[in-house]
Image (cartoon, rainbow, N blue to C red; front, top):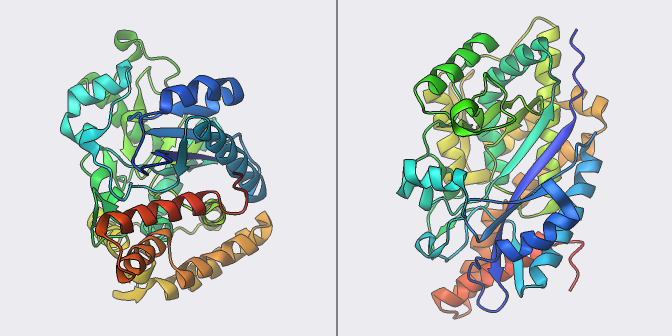
Length: 397
């Protein structure tokens, strides 16, 4: 039996909006100037100057994650207010255009633009990354790989609960996670492939380093890399090993607008990983399905969110997410009990019943139009709603 701490960490990416116009504001640099004094490495820039990212301390459980999310959102909001801005936790802005955004200076961002051109420049999207701690020994790396292989099946479910990007450049897209579509243009993104062993994963990283796809520290000045001096962070899968931290990093989710929804997703990810580890210890495992089939469910989640149906491949039929959620909560119950997160896991049912951030954004938009608002004013109403929900329960000023 491998001792696995299952510690938690979360990274949240926010959009910075002007308080008057509700347009995006390229104000990250003055926010960072003071933010670094308050948070150090817990705050950093993203690709575009209208984005900002924060990362939590290492947490033992979902309650600590909640405290960290609130602390970090409060600080970033305060920094934004000092520059007549607000932050919103949504994976796309309802109406601002990527063509009008400024790219951050720096070798990493400049290299991304040089290599991927328009694919990079249009990444006006934000996400939420959850880290689950495994440890840094070879046996932990093997376990990370095995759990990642199994967890692939559940990544579409996690996306569905988090969807918060129904708009793109002033238009309702007809999807609930348009971020997923924009992000899919990146190479080395999406549902990860399966690997028979950690050594197979290392071999792939080394090949990509040898051919120049991934950067090497000895020739590109990269530090703190984890595999033969190669920067594996340019593998942008929906789940990936992060060996510098000894974690499995889950990257499939849109950013949750509500704090409690974020806490629920983190608790669910921790309990799901724990469940898969428990199955492994009983010489059992979740069935591995081909990429095509998992991607079919991911598309359904991006398109319909919590209102859709995913395919139960064991039964070979489509099932409403509501029903699958009941089964998932039951599956995770033993692990949730051991982790003390049963209440948070039960909230998955509430997310399905009440709707996602994407559902609420669309409802605000439609209600404004029904009241006679113009298209632009209806979109501004959505931003107002996102500002309120991002700070729900703790917002000051």
